[in-house]
Length: 48
Ligand SMILES: [Zn+2]
Image 1 (cartoon, rainbow, N blue to C red):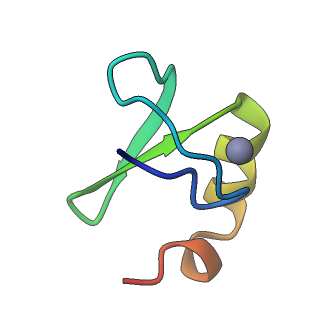
Image 2: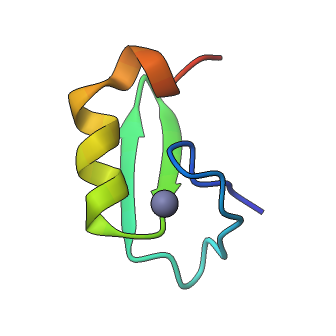
């Protein structure tokens, strides 16, 4: 199950509405708020 990297909530990839692909990696978000936050601060959240 994917995890919202911003707030840590576990999401269902089939129903998650907010997602982006970053560096070939898929990220799922619980809300547009978290998605925006991630976009603004990718290096902080996309730590792989
Ligand atoms: Zn979230």
